[in-house]
Length: 299
Image 1 (spheres, rainbow, N blue to C red):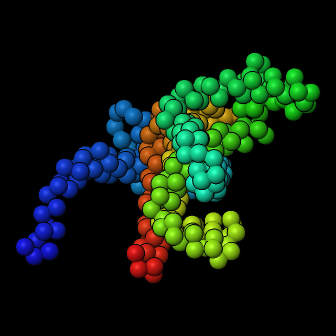
Image 2: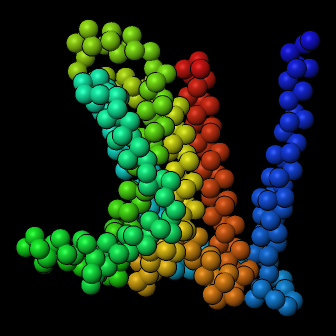
Image 3: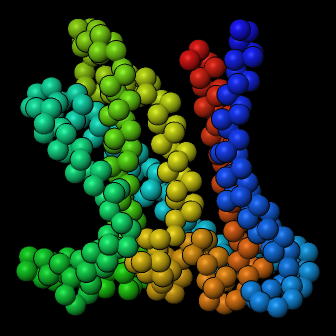
Protein backbone atom coordinates (compact mmCIF):
# COMPACT_ATOMS: atom_id res chain seq x y z
CA UNK A 1 0.00 0.00 0.00
CA UNK A 2 1.42 3.45 -0.94
CA UNK A 3 2.76 5.50 1.97
CA UNK A 4 0.38 8.36 1.21
CA UNK A 5 -2.66 6.04 1.55
CA UNK A 6 -1.33 4.67 4.85
CA UNK A 7 -0.92 8.19 6.27
CA UNK A 8 -4.45 9.15 5.26
CA UNK A 9 -5.76 6.27 7.37
CA UNK A 10 -4.63 8.06 10.53
CA UNK A 11 -6.76 11.10 9.82
CA UNK A 12 -9.91 9.31 11.04
CA UNK A 13 -8.36 8.86 14.50
CA UNK A 14 -7.94 12.63 14.78
CA UNK A 15 -11.68 13.30 14.36
CA UNK A 16 -12.70 12.67 18.05
CA UNK A 17 -9.92 14.96 19.28
CA UNK A 18 -10.84 17.60 16.71
CA UNK A 19 -14.50 17.52 17.76
CA UNK A 20 -13.56 17.85 21.45
CA UNK A 21 -11.19 20.70 20.60
CA UNK A 22 -13.95 22.58 18.79
CA UNK A 23 -16.50 21.98 21.59
CA UNK A 24 -14.23 22.74 24.56
CA UNK A 25 -11.79 25.32 23.15
CA UNK A 26 -12.71 26.53 19.65
CA UNK A 27 -16.36 27.52 20.09
CA UNK A 28 -15.94 29.03 23.62
CA UNK A 29 -12.97 31.05 22.35
CA UNK A 30 -15.01 32.44 19.44
CA UNK A 31 -17.85 33.25 21.88
CA UNK A 32 -15.31 35.00 24.14
CA UNK A 33 -14.16 37.15 21.22
CA UNK A 34 -17.79 38.02 20.44
CA UNK A 35 -18.51 39.00 24.06
CA UNK A 36 -15.33 41.11 24.19
CA UNK A 37 -16.89 43.38 21.58
CA UNK A 38 -19.83 44.17 23.85
CA UNK A 39 -20.63 45.86 27.13
CA UNK A 40 -22.35 43.24 29.27
CA UNK A 41 -22.78 42.54 32.98
CA UNK A 42 -23.48 38.82 32.52
CA UNK A 43 -27.26 39.06 32.37
CA UNK A 44 -29.66 41.03 30.25
CA UNK A 45 -29.01 42.54 26.85
CA UNK A 46 -25.52 43.01 25.40
CA UNK A 47 -24.53 46.42 24.05
CA UNK A 48 -22.23 46.44 21.00
CA UNK A 49 -19.15 48.61 21.66
CA UNK A 50 -16.75 47.38 18.97
CA UNK A 51 -13.08 47.60 19.96
CA UNK A 52 -13.66 49.90 22.95
CA UNK A 53 -12.82 47.17 25.47
CA UNK A 54 -9.49 46.49 23.73
CA UNK A 55 -8.62 50.20 23.70
CA UNK A 56 -9.45 50.33 27.41
CA UNK A 57 -7.26 47.28 28.13
CA UNK A 58 -4.26 48.76 26.33
CA UNK A 59 -4.49 52.00 28.34
CA UNK A 60 -5.36 50.38 31.66
CA UNK A 61 -2.54 50.90 34.21
CA UNK A 62 -3.80 48.01 36.33
CA UNK A 63 -3.62 45.64 33.36
CA UNK A 64 -0.05 46.68 32.62
CA UNK A 65 0.85 46.32 36.31
CA UNK A 66 -0.55 42.79 36.20
CA UNK A 67 1.38 42.13 33.00
CA UNK A 68 4.65 43.24 34.64
CA UNK A 69 3.92 40.83 37.48
CA UNK A 70 3.36 38.12 34.87
CA UNK A 71 6.77 38.82 33.35
CA UNK A 72 8.29 38.40 36.82
CA UNK A 73 6.40 35.11 37.11
CA UNK A 74 8.02 33.93 33.88
CA UNK A 75 11.38 34.34 35.62
CA UNK A 76 10.26 32.14 38.52
CA UNK A 77 8.27 29.60 36.47
CA UNK A 78 10.49 29.31 33.38
CA UNK A 79 14.03 30.66 33.83
CA UNK A 80 15.01 29.54 37.33
CA UNK A 81 13.30 26.08 37.26
CA UNK A 82 14.68 25.30 33.79
CA UNK A 83 18.27 26.23 34.69
CA UNK A 84 18.01 24.71 38.17
CA UNK A 85 16.31 21.57 36.86
CA UNK A 86 19.00 21.15 34.22
CA UNK A 87 21.84 21.50 36.73
CA UNK A 88 20.19 19.12 39.20
CA UNK A 89 19.34 16.60 36.47
CA UNK A 90 22.96 16.49 35.29
CA UNK A 91 24.18 16.23 38.90
CA UNK A 92 21.82 13.34 39.69
CA UNK A 93 22.43 11.57 36.38
CA UNK A 94 26.17 12.06 36.07
CA UNK A 95 27.31 12.02 39.71
CA UNK A 96 24.80 10.76 42.29
CA UNK A 97 23.63 7.85 40.15
CA UNK A 98 27.19 6.84 39.19
CA UNK A 99 29.11 7.59 42.39
CA UNK A 100 26.51 6.87 45.10
CA UNK A 101 23.42 4.86 44.12
CA UNK A 102 20.51 4.67 41.69
CA UNK A 103 18.10 4.34 44.63
CA UNK A 104 19.14 7.70 46.08
CA UNK A 105 18.71 9.26 42.63
CA UNK A 106 15.17 7.88 42.42
CA UNK A 107 14.31 9.16 45.91
CA UNK A 108 15.67 12.66 45.17
CA UNK A 109 13.92 12.81 41.78
CA UNK A 110 10.61 11.82 43.38
CA UNK A 111 11.11 14.41 46.13
CA UNK A 112 11.72 17.22 43.68
CA UNK A 113 8.68 16.19 41.63
CA UNK A 114 6.35 15.89 44.64
CA UNK A 115 5.06 19.53 44.50
CA UNK A 116 3.82 18.87 40.95
CA UNK A 117 1.36 16.22 42.10
CA UNK A 118 0.10 18.09 45.18
CA UNK A 119 -3.26 19.85 44.72
CA UNK A 120 -2.63 23.58 44.32
CA UNK A 121 -5.21 24.42 47.00
CA UNK A 122 -3.52 22.20 49.61
CA UNK A 123 -0.02 23.42 48.76
CA UNK A 124 -1.27 27.02 48.87
CA UNK A 125 -2.85 26.57 52.29
CA UNK A 126 0.34 24.97 53.64
CA UNK A 127 2.47 27.84 52.32
CA UNK A 128 -0.03 30.27 53.81
CA UNK A 129 0.57 28.67 57.20
CA UNK A 130 4.36 28.71 56.75
CA UNK A 131 4.38 32.41 55.81
CA UNK A 132 1.72 33.52 58.30
CA UNK A 133 3.01 36.64 60.16
CA UNK A 134 1.61 35.51 63.55
CA UNK A 135 2.17 31.75 63.81
CA UNK A 136 4.07 30.90 60.59
CA UNK A 137 7.07 28.59 60.70
CA UNK A 138 9.35 30.96 58.78
CA UNK A 139 8.94 33.88 61.18
CA UNK A 140 9.24 31.47 64.13
CA UNK A 141 12.57 30.20 62.79
CA UNK A 142 13.84 33.74 62.22
CA UNK A 143 12.75 34.80 65.72
CA UNK A 144 14.43 31.83 67.39
CA UNK A 145 17.52 32.15 65.22
CA UNK A 146 18.13 35.71 66.42
CA UNK A 147 17.02 37.21 63.11
CA UNK A 148 13.84 38.93 64.28
CA UNK A 149 14.61 42.00 62.17
CA UNK A 150 13.97 39.91 59.06
CA UNK A 151 10.46 38.76 60.02
CA UNK A 152 7.70 40.03 57.73
CA UNK A 153 4.10 39.65 56.80
CA UNK A 154 5.44 37.86 53.74
CA UNK A 155 2.24 37.73 51.70
CA UNK A 156 0.68 40.85 53.19
CA UNK A 157 3.34 43.48 52.44
CA UNK A 158 3.80 44.92 48.96
CA UNK A 159 7.58 44.65 49.13
CA UNK A 160 7.63 40.93 49.95
CA UNK A 161 4.39 39.54 48.46
CA UNK A 162 5.55 39.09 44.86
CA UNK A 163 9.02 37.70 45.74
CA UNK A 164 7.35 35.28 48.18
CA UNK A 165 4.94 34.03 45.51
CA UNK A 166 7.84 33.74 43.05
CA UNK A 167 9.83 31.60 45.50
CA UNK A 168 6.79 29.35 45.98
CA UNK A 169 6.43 29.03 42.19
CA UNK A 170 10.08 27.94 41.90
CA UNK A 171 9.34 25.24 44.49
CA UNK A 172 6.25 24.20 42.49
CA UNK A 173 8.00 24.06 39.13
CA UNK A 174 11.50 22.71 39.78
CA UNK A 175 10.54 19.03 39.56
CA UNK A 176 8.92 19.27 36.13
CA UNK A 177 12.02 20.13 34.05
CA UNK A 178 14.14 17.87 36.27
CA UNK A 179 12.09 14.79 35.35
CA UNK A 180 11.93 15.73 31.65
CA UNK A 181 15.69 16.33 31.45
CA UNK A 182 16.58 13.12 33.31
CA UNK A 183 14.37 11.17 30.89
CA UNK A 184 16.07 12.93 27.98
CA UNK A 185 19.50 11.96 29.28
CA UNK A 186 18.49 8.30 29.20
CA UNK A 187 18.54 8.45 25.42
CA UNK A 188 21.98 10.10 25.22
CA UNK A 189 24.57 7.64 23.95
CA UNK A 190 26.92 7.07 26.96
CA UNK A 191 29.82 6.51 24.57
CA UNK A 192 29.69 10.20 23.65
CA UNK A 193 30.21 11.26 27.28
CA UNK A 194 32.81 8.54 27.84
CA UNK A 195 34.74 9.74 24.78
CA UNK A 196 34.56 13.30 26.10
CA UNK A 197 35.87 12.07 29.47
CA UNK A 198 38.76 10.21 27.83
CA UNK A 199 39.61 13.35 25.86
CA UNK A 200 39.94 15.21 29.15
CA UNK A 201 36.62 17.09 29.20
CA UNK A 202 35.77 18.43 32.64
CA UNK A 203 32.30 18.34 34.21
CA UNK A 204 31.27 21.72 32.79
CA UNK A 205 32.33 20.74 29.26
CA UNK A 206 30.34 17.49 29.48
CA UNK A 207 27.41 19.55 30.81
CA UNK A 208 27.54 21.67 27.63
CA UNK A 209 27.57 18.51 25.48
CA UNK A 210 24.47 17.21 27.28
CA UNK A 211 22.72 20.56 26.77
CA UNK A 212 23.23 20.32 23.00
CA UNK A 213 22.04 16.71 22.87
CA UNK A 214 18.82 17.33 24.80
CA UNK A 215 17.99 20.67 23.19
CA UNK A 216 14.58 19.43 21.85
CA UNK A 217 13.46 18.61 25.41
CA UNK A 218 14.74 21.97 26.67
CA UNK A 219 12.64 23.71 23.99
CA UNK A 220 9.53 21.80 25.03
CA UNK A 221 10.06 22.65 28.70
CA UNK A 222 10.58 26.36 27.95
CA UNK A 223 7.46 26.46 25.75
CA UNK A 224 5.14 24.63 28.15
CA UNK A 225 6.33 26.50 31.25
CA UNK A 226 6.05 29.88 29.47
CA UNK A 227 2.44 29.08 28.57
CA UNK A 228 1.85 27.98 32.17
CA UNK A 229 3.35 31.23 33.50
CA UNK A 230 1.12 33.36 31.28
CA UNK A 231 -1.97 31.41 32.43
CA UNK A 232 -1.11 31.30 36.11
CA UNK A 233 -4.23 31.70 38.23
CA UNK A 234 -4.79 29.06 40.92
CA UNK A 235 -1.70 29.87 42.99
CA UNK A 236 -2.56 33.59 43.00
CA UNK A 237 -6.17 32.85 43.90
CA UNK A 238 -5.19 30.65 46.84
CA UNK A 239 -2.25 32.66 48.18
CA UNK A 240 -2.96 36.39 47.74
CA UNK A 241 -5.99 37.06 45.49
CA UNK A 242 -3.80 39.57 43.64
CA UNK A 243 -3.00 41.64 46.71
CA UNK A 244 -1.89 43.51 48.64
CA UNK A 245 -3.14 46.23 46.31
CA UNK A 246 -2.09 45.02 42.88
CA UNK A 247 1.29 43.66 44.05
CA UNK A 248 0.67 40.07 42.87
CA UNK A 249 -2.12 40.67 40.37
CA UNK A 250 -1.70 38.79 37.06
CA UNK A 251 -3.79 39.17 33.87
CA UNK A 252 -5.71 35.90 34.29
CA UNK A 253 -6.80 36.88 37.82
CA UNK A 254 -7.53 40.44 36.63
CA UNK A 255 -9.84 38.96 33.96
CA UNK A 256 -11.50 36.81 36.65
CA UNK A 257 -12.10 39.89 38.81
CA UNK A 258 -13.78 41.69 35.92
CA UNK A 259 -15.85 38.63 35.00
CA UNK A 260 -17.17 37.64 38.41
CA UNK A 261 -16.51 40.42 40.94
CA UNK A 262 -17.07 43.59 38.89
CA UNK A 263 -19.62 42.10 36.42
CA UNK A 264 -17.67 43.65 33.50
CA UNK A 265 -17.89 40.56 31.35
CA UNK A 266 -17.04 42.26 28.05
CA UNK A 267 -13.91 43.84 29.53
CA UNK A 268 -12.84 40.57 31.16
CA UNK A 269 -13.31 38.81 27.81
CA UNK A 270 -11.09 41.39 26.10
CA UNK A 271 -8.30 40.74 28.65
CA UNK A 272 -8.65 36.98 28.10
CA UNK A 273 -8.55 37.40 24.32
CA UNK A 274 -5.42 39.56 24.49
CA UNK A 275 -3.60 36.98 26.66
CA UNK A 276 -4.77 34.05 24.52
CA UNK A 277 -3.53 35.80 21.37
CA UNK A 278 -0.17 36.47 23.04
CA UNK A 279 0.15 32.80 24.07
CA UNK A 280 -0.72 31.62 20.55
CA UNK A 281 1.87 33.94 19.00
CA UNK A 282 4.57 32.81 21.46
CA UNK A 283 3.71 29.18 20.76
CA UNK A 284 4.05 29.71 17.00
CA UNK A 285 7.42 31.43 17.49
CA UNK A 286 8.72 28.61 19.72
CA UNK A 287 7.53 25.90 17.33
CA UNK A 288 9.08 27.69 14.36
CA UNK A 289 12.41 28.00 16.20
CA UNK A 290 12.28 24.32 17.15
CA UNK A 291 11.53 23.21 13.58
CA UNK A 292 14.37 25.36 12.32
CA UNK A 293 16.80 23.85 14.87
CA UNK A 294 15.70 20.31 14.02
CA UNK A 295 16.06 21.00 10.31
CA UNK A 296 19.55 22.41 10.76
CA UNK A 297 20.61 19.47 12.94
CA UNK A 298 19.01 16.95 10.55
CA UNK A 299 16.81 15.37 13.24
